[in-house]
Image (cartoon, rainbow, N blue to C red; front, side):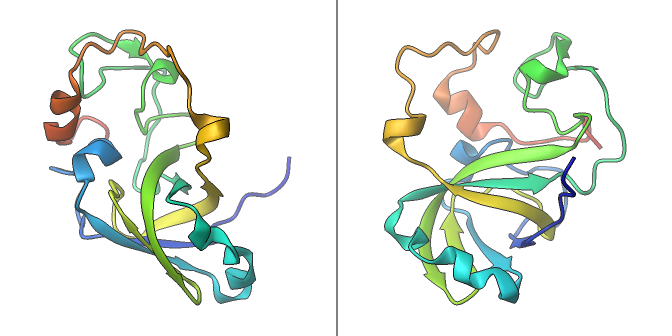
Length: 158
């Protein structure tokens, strides 16, 4: 397998895992900066034409993994692969954020739900024609959009 190494760092106002939004929908007005390693900044060419981007990152503060977890939006235990829990075998996270601007090796975003100092593994553009899925199902999740926006993290995934 190819070695995966961070390509930069995500800067956010969240200094602690507690009381963070659990998804980007709950972080609508939260600004962040992605600081890409300078030698990779040429790879940001043309990114500013997209409205949203995927951030793929490492849950670097997670110290354990579990196959069965109780998600933030539920009280029932679920298989980790049916959740967004950070307690995954590879501790990889994914967020879709709004792209504000690209300047040199910095990417400015809105709607970020990530801990400050998080190692960035990759950036990919969100493309509605590729990524939009009509008639999708959300499995066990019964929470309303408002519930997701208002939910904040606790210590369950430390």
